[in-house]
Length: 153
Length: 153
Image 1 (cartoon, chains in turn blue, green):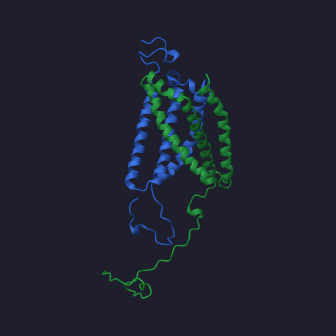
Image 2: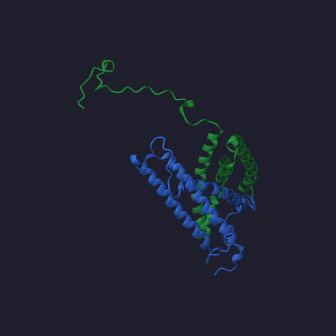
Image 3: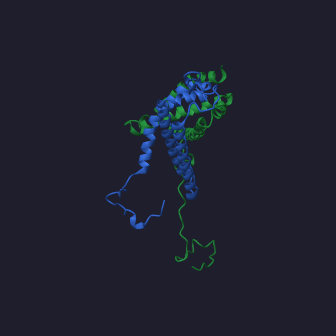
């Protein structure tokens, strides 16, 4: 918050409230939480059901299991939307909490900067992993990769 | 203003209007129960739980993106780290994580109904108990299935 020029203040009993022009980012953040929240209920419940309920549950998860999923464009895009919707939803929620509890402007700026930069790094890292992933890396132990890899040279 | 020492006992009574300090009336006692804004009702607890579960899920998400990124390093690295998720201690912690996700999901839908459904605010208490009930039902179904995967063969 910057200091407000007294001449900018509405006089008492002004007939009309002064409206701010431009995009209201707080409003769009509020809307984003609700829209992405509904999408995330579907995406995360689906994610948990496929990984932890179907098949052998958590004990089935290993490199070959993930390779089987990420070699399918459907799961690549599923995980892509899961990553982006979830991390931005979570970061925006953490932003709200920082704004609620951190009153020192410098500390708040540092925390918000750390939050935004960690989100940016993880979004880029996760997206690269999803789309550059090689399910059959050359020279890998055949016992650890998916069965469809066949001969590895 | 040069402060001439006044006898404290006579200060208020013998007030010379130019040097007397203004006496401020004592503040009225707070009408907020318990001197806090936290009312201890369903609305407060749904808000508190939504924050706590949200923060917990956020920090898990950071770790989960990084551990999944290990598929890009090597099958051995990924399997070594994901093995930690299959230990009994982490298996039980995952129940807490899934419970947090399930509550956050259902309570998030409740918040959307409070915001957008015409009579949402009137039914917010009832909806909170429905959120708890749905979370218990989902966890009652998920818990045995997950524990079999963690402790069973």
